[in-house]
Length: 118
Image (cartoon, rainbow, N blue to C red; front, side, top):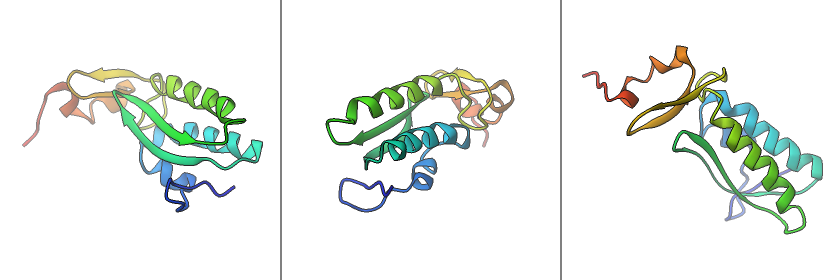
């Protein structure tokens, strides 16, 4: 299925995966696979990390929107328990900048703890 942006340009799943860390790629795959399974086209509005979790904004035909939204909501909720960097179990880390990371990847992001390396 050829999913697209608001302006009609193609928005392939690999482009969506580039907007977030590798650890959440399976969540993007699950959303795209579900839409493909339904045989419907989504219009992808935005894919990003916000407040440590996955955000996937899309539009679809009103008859299928609720079922795709359910899968998107599940993936967004799961992202808060999956390390965005590697995909291992993780948790929210940081203070002013928040990311979902595992213990191993947490040390790779000192800026989320206010530690800046010059």
